[in-house]
Image 1 (cartoon, rainbow, N blue to C red):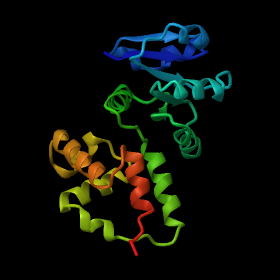
Image 2 (image 1 turned 90 degrees about the horizontal axis):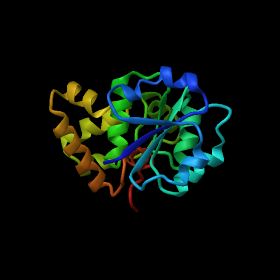
Image 3 (image 1 turned 90 degrees about the vertical axis):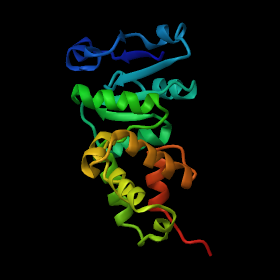
Length: 201
């Protein structure tokens, strides 16, 4: 079972984070000391602030620990920069318990967690690029196409299920098929693949 750690340098943050409400979550204030005895099955939630250095997070990523960042002032620019470095999730520090749970579940299953604002930023970037090919649609079913369009809007599996009036299990199956068809490993790679789709010569 994955051991959940919340790393922060601000004790007041613990009162604001709703993570521990439904899960066993150990709060740590000294990352260097904790790293010396971390078990292999660990997921870290890091509450970002000015006292937490980028190098510390990069060290965790290098050691292949899944990292979810919690930002009190989230922005799509910051999120995209962190995803480029290898974090697995990024969301508002004050997100509700359900949203944090969804992020943890997604990362634990091997996916990444993209907030809706981050996904919209990716879509906006694509809108400023030359029009991409739509031929990718030839490789998917009608329901997979509908699922993919909702993924690109930043919706969670639960939200997609509600929108399409299907079960969350069916949504996961559609996404799994899409990842396989486009030979990518997660939602972010899938979105980038579709955004940059080019017809073969």
